Image (tube, rainbow, N blue to C red; front, side, top):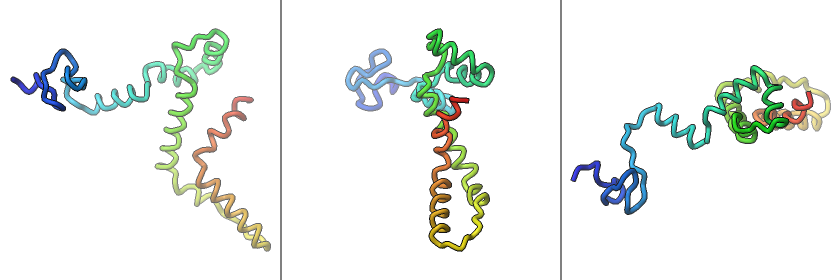
Amino acid sequence: MKEKDTCKSCNSIIINNFCSNCGQKIYDKRFTIHSFFMYLLDALDINKSFFYTIRMLFIKPDKVIYDYLKKGSTISYFNPLKYLLIISGIHIALILTLFYDEGEKIIDIDSTNDLEIDMFIEQLIELFAENIHFMPILFIPFFSII
């Protein structure tokens, strides 16, 4: 028997694209960077509607909202909750990797005479600096009013 005719997991005979013994899917194609990104997009359930939604939100955001809410045309657009989570994840990853130390440069506290106020302000600034990547998510309700 050839290596291709047996399952790599349980060494049983392969029928069609699945192992008849363990049910593992048989992959005949070579693993590449392109196939990795395709598997990643598939795992996140990102298809062309994700990129179409991004494009349309930049070009015609009013049309997206009208189509989705008024007309009920949801099939051509990406799920809003998944969109929010993925875009927020990308945003947080970029902020943490690119601008991690920028918050320390911005923070410059003028010292007051009251030590308790200084401590409170320092703790508040540290809290905001540590959680700055969550701020866009918290501001979504305010941005939706605009």
